[in-house]
Length: 187
Length: 187
Image 1 (cartoon, each protein chain N blue to C red):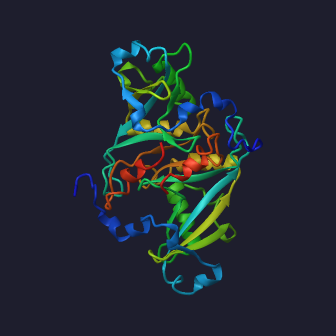
Image 2: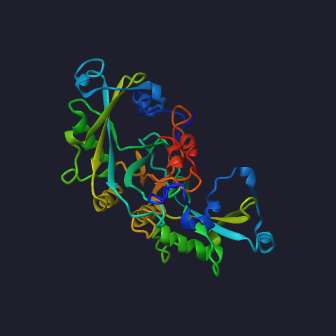
Image 3: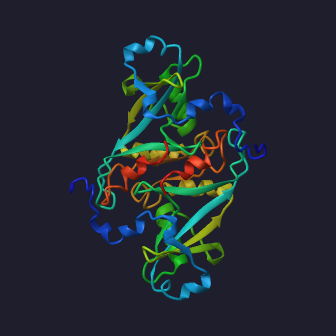
């Protein structure tokens, strides 16, 4: 194991790295909101993530309707992901998410913040015993552009977050390039 | 075929889409510089791309030596790629690349521009009959950060270019997350 490059070691990340393991879809079950106050969910680890998006019909190359600009991040582990993270002690999933959005994207939560109305769904990871709460935050395209610019000034930029990208949602002429190709990206 | 979303059509891209097809490594041979003035290379289509990078040893999470910050783009087709593109009539590969860097990344070519000294290698795509010239442009980490900020103001941002990311070059504790995971990203 190389200690000077840190390669193949976890360091202090060892305590939480298992949350980042990629597991397949059978590892997840959807949990109805009213069940969240029951175990195993209530007393388990929690994480919350957010899809920030803007509707966008300005055709790409004058050919493809982008539908929307949806933001994802290149993460430190080489996967693409939505911004968010683990809920800390004393936080609820919304407070944690607004904190993570500030740390990871420098989001101006006085303008755009996640609230109960942004809630979409919760999944339970059986292997990780982890509740994953998902939220969606719609903004205008101009606001999304400002969010992208601010993201470069975030505390976590250049370390935990290695860039913000938009997802191509259209399918190009070969039926593969565009969204289908994007979906093969590890995430 | 859907004409309103443009899905599964090429529109005017039909003429050049074949250049974007992903082919495997056997489709490429390295061409020595002195052979470039001979056919089939000299009179074939040409493209040039550039790796903009900065050395960076500031440990990520205090654990991983990032080695460098290397910029890639999320492209319109869902692949990650280095900035650059096809050489137009009347251009040489360097002039074309500086034009593409301006269009795609809003690079201030009065400060940072590709020159003969940035040249790295050329590959010939047998199937596409295309010469692919590759250049590398080293900048300081502070300069790279400015380049990332400027990239959001590029002409092609939000259409041909869907974001700029840094590549994670370290390997995490499971021998998979980090650079190995990143390399499975379509590109």
